[in-house]
Figure (cartoon, rainbow, N blue to C red):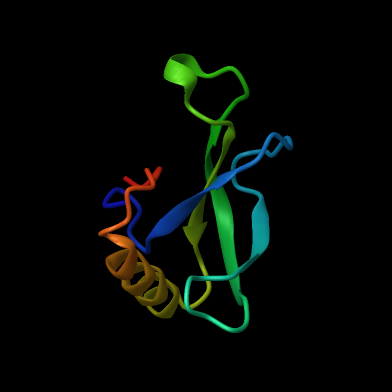
Length: 90
């Protein structure tokens, strides 16, 4: 997500959120034995019923040790590049 200075991720959810709300996520990355706690702020919202079948969810910009979190996620994505499963990354 180049437009987020510290990086971020998309979380599929139909739960209502407000922009700017702080969230904590427990994310289990591929090849990890324990989930990582990721803190961030809601920076965009895709509502249920969005155009083009885009799934509902929120964008979360990293606020807590963003370099470490971003590196972990980028490494996990790099390992999955050969997968035929589509992603919602930007």
